[in-house]
Amino acid sequence: MSNSKLYKGSLATIILKLLSQQDKMYGYEITQKVKGLTKGELNITEGALYPALHKLEAEGVLEVEVVRVDNRLRKYYKLTEKGKIETVSKLAELEEYIKNMQVLFNPKFGLE
Amino acid sequence: MSNSKLYKGSLATIILKLLSQQDKMYGYEITQKVKGLTKGELNITEGALYPALHKLEAEGVLEVEVVRVDNRLRKYYKLTEKGKIETVSKLAELEEYIKNMQVLFNPKFGLE
DNA sequence: CTTATATACATAAATAATTTAGGTATGTTT
DNA sequence: AAACATACCTAAATTATTTATGTATATAAG
Image (tube, rainbow over all chains, first blue to last red; front, top):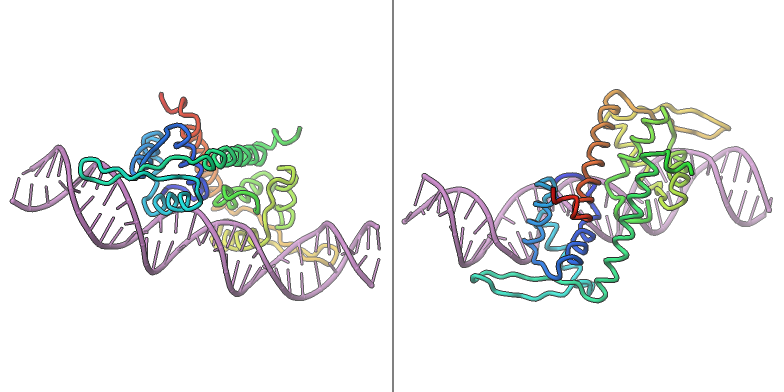
């Protein structure tokens, strides 16, 4: 995530959102997906991603399935039931955040 | 800023934006303005605000003028020339951030 | 064949932004 | 007299991240 300081705090939300659309993904796949969708503008660093995935797993938000492909390991993550609920609330938080930024940055909207 | 983790990294941008619309403001006024505009949803904590103001001042982005009002101190901050340039780039960064979040969260937009 | 690049995981130390929890002091309202 | 609002401040702890490594296999390029 080595671009803008603004991304701080959004990593978990991004992971959850991607997993709500794709059933299961592994870490490296997530970095590539994000890089692709943002045309290279947002690069999730591994040092941020793996600890974040481990934390979400420890919280019971994600569950993991290890698969060996081409003699290399992949750890597929998917949302648990708790994770689906958590995703909804994280997405609501993001929407709130963006709305608040809009009223701060386009004061017209805030006036009524 | 004791609401959502998402605000991390946006505090300086918020301060600069407010000062680009209002010439000069003091710390407490900034907290009240933000609280008002966001209907109480975003509360900047003093522990975040004051160090942020001091840092921006140290960087030459803000300049300060101390005024005594009703026997109480107020430190008015305003943008320097450097600060005006910095504001433009911070706002551009925020727009980039929001665009990237849109392609991540509304994948339709990313497809062409 | 050997070097570079891509795939795939991981962790530890350092940095940065913030929260939490204090502290000082004056003015106003109950 | 107490509570609340105004107005500043800082230090310790927490948290998320960057930066810098490390391991290992597969594939492409020279």
